[in-house]
Image (cartoon, rainbow, N blue to C red; front, side, top):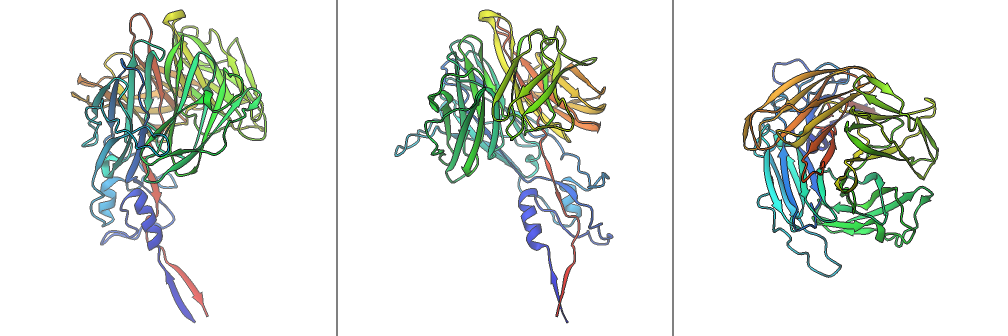
Length: 523
């Protein structure tokens, strides 16, 4: 009988490409690791894409780039602490991780077929480049020439790397405060709350970070179902370029106030975000909703919201019946304006929620009216502050819970407010304010969240702050936590604001902890 031994070298090589060098054998003199328990190690590479900030000549854009100190806490499958971070790799006898680097580069607007892309790099003085974890860096750009950006971080700068793009447009059709956390490339995005209404100019910005051409498809769904598209050939996005697509040019169907946009790729991957501008109510970015889910949390509705509109879509074959609740600082309540919403499969549903907050901040919670029929949905809120010509809008997409750690950058000494929602059970979180882009000392605080409440608090400010800074939220214990950051920069009586949800940074990934002996016996 012959004996053949199969190794895990190929598997280990694949994992190392994603997570960095992580040995599968124990260090000299140590007992072999338990082969049944995986370990979490920091990712070794992260990619981010920032859309072109504005077409306004009076736009002013700030970038803040940041990687938190230390890797996100790793745990084994059983919940016990495992080895993580660079020290873990060294302990396994593999030496240093890959060289640390985090930088952004301009991505020109893709030209018509056959034409050379414009350089389009004027306006960005210096792309924000992180040099070490824990220290944010900033950059500024002015006018309409600031380009979209593609970037990547590697080594110790990869886990948790985030970039915030904040643009102030004081006048014109796109007037407002536009904030967006630069997105990771993917192949599937949902955008409820888009529009082709006459007063709206909504663009989907598609940015390709890779060396080959990506091909994207955009589908539009209104209250009556899918809109008829003028073309089904797909949209080519050349390598390292961006393509802004005006939604109203994709269909000949009548204008729709409420749309759900679905972006997928036939080949390659893209970063996608919707830029929404309302002629009368301002402008902001509409980020993608969290993945379809039977329960949805939309965190951080401002206390002084004058208008809140919920837009939801059920992408599957079944209708969704959802109970609407507002999670306040003292508990859950049912809004007087609407206690439920019926979302037909393949159709966009919208409901106005007037006088929703009544002077208290809160988060919207959507749950199935019948727990046995938890139909997945995507959702977003269109929120307004102020009235008339001094009105300003922002969007709050459905947010996934923070599993371990999440960061939002570009916070200011004044005007940054956090909303932390624990919709099911109580939880404990640690909030860390980083140093500033121009100086300051980090500070941290631990906050206990009561079950079924939203905790709203001014973001902690670093000691001796100079410049902008980042806020990192870590879930230490308890149930799921959803969070957002409200940034206010009022101008000329207009309550300009933007809301960014916290998305888990996915800074670690599970890898095997020891060599396994896979032995095959054959005759």
